[in-house]
Length: 107
Image (cartoon, rainbow, N blue to C red; front, side, top):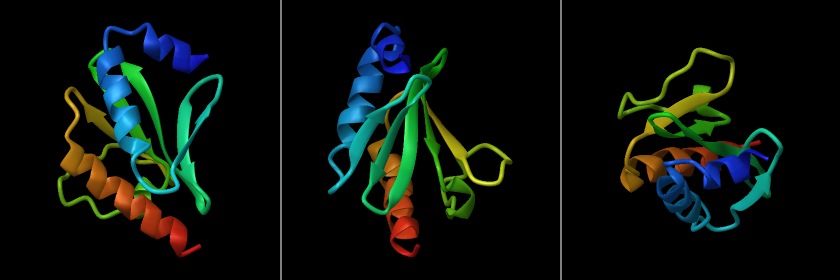
């Protein structure tokens, strides 16, 4: 599973820090899939998390609908936008997760 690979990564500590932070949001749960670890609330998916050679990537499942005041999201697909992190910037991650929660609530 990808989760096990993330725990074996040189970026394990960053992964676990991000994971713990994401899980502090009310109602957010984790689902460990074969290829990715996903976070969701009762209204839908929020993001996925995985280690990368540079650190971690947090892929926001509704990132294309988000405002990006920090200009840090990458991707051109229909839905997902990715936030690369070398060190966890909690202010930035909070900003995007809160938007995901609001977008999910509007469904």
